[in-house]
Image 1: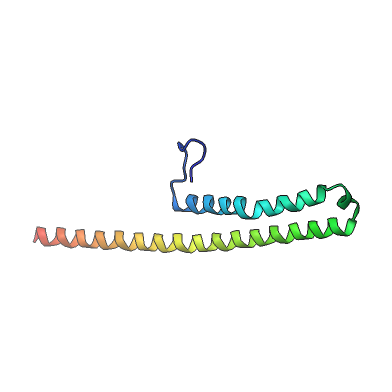
Image 2: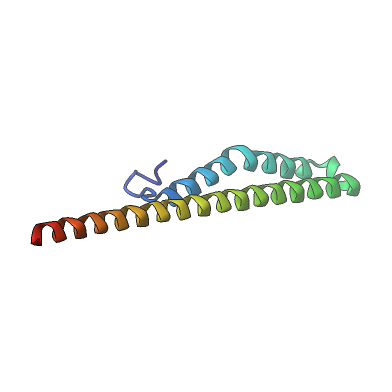
Length: 108
């Protein structure tokens, strides 16, 4: 996804994941939240305190669920970043060792 005219876009994997999560929230969860708010704004429904409280509780639960899912995605992203870092370090170490062997073989 791009922002604006496409001149700005997420360049890193973490940025892309964050944009995907935000888009999913905006496209799936946010309309549900808006519908609850709209139900609160109906004239007759506003006088029913129990209904308003149940809507607020429902919104609170949905917000907690989204927060939980975001934390879970954040942990998964951290694990992937750590794996990528270890893989990159292992490749760098292998490349350095190979270059050192090549240099040693060439000098003898």
